[in-house]
Image 1: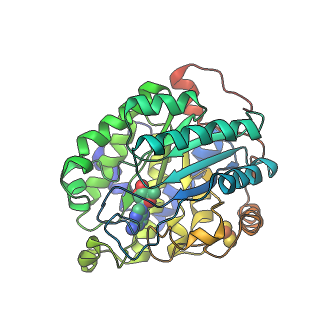
Image 2 (image 1 turned 90 degrees about the vertical axis):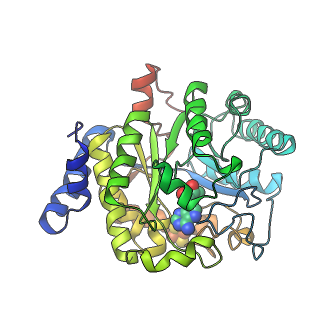
Length: 358
Ligand code: 5AD
Ligand code: FES
């Protein structure tokens, strides 16, 4: 299965009916065999929606003046991280809009050190703060971040520029370069794409999967594209597949990726739940093994709407934890409490020994 070619991938992405059931079942079997039946939690803190970029699909793009910009205070961020640690999540993801000022870089650096301090060095930290220089990536790595998420959004240059302005700060080449820097620095690297974008074809999606394989990624997060009224891409909504079709295609993408890269970590993207209330659990049942409960303080969530119908806007961390725990148990999986749940792939490719806990 690992050696699927592009045509075979396209066939699988288009699978419906019995063929699709077979694909999804096989992906789940491969996941359990390669990574076990555990689901790992990453507590997500969306700590700032201030962003220098203007990606055409994103609700918090710089040009959207309707958004009230926020910065969660350091104390509140640390409080969320403490919640994660005390609840045995073992890992957090710090996500924000993209900034590269010295103040921002230092702020993240200080936060990393403080999070390590308050958790006896135990809490694993993933960053998702966009494109930065290799020097910044190295600085953050040395201060304790060990995984980084940077979605390529589309690996096709032409499509990339249909969903981003074509200019210096939205350069496709720079995005690729950033992914390479992250790998060179020593991070476990995660990337991903949106599925069901206007102008996107099955061929693009098959190429995305082959791109992940070629880049030899450790983690992947990909979910359906969901139109947002206050973004330029909204004008092309007549080109979109139905939400249900985008959802189904996203599950097929996850399943095929699991066959292509059996030992990586694959997240059940939150955007799945914006279409189907059980969307994330459905992804966990067909190949995904990571989920990111939202730990952003409730007061700010309203202003981090990357897309419409984002779930859990009113639920606090405790509620989300209980809710997800129940859902995951119902879906027949176990939660890897107290374990970092690092990508097995990373240890194999880097020949390092896994750390049992930080
Ligand atoms: N629909 C779905 N996903 C989106 N993202 C941003 N905007 C949207 C949207 N409208 C995703 C991007 C980004 C991640 C944080 O959220 O892929 O990398
Ligand atoms: Fe947030 Fe269910 S995961 S309420």
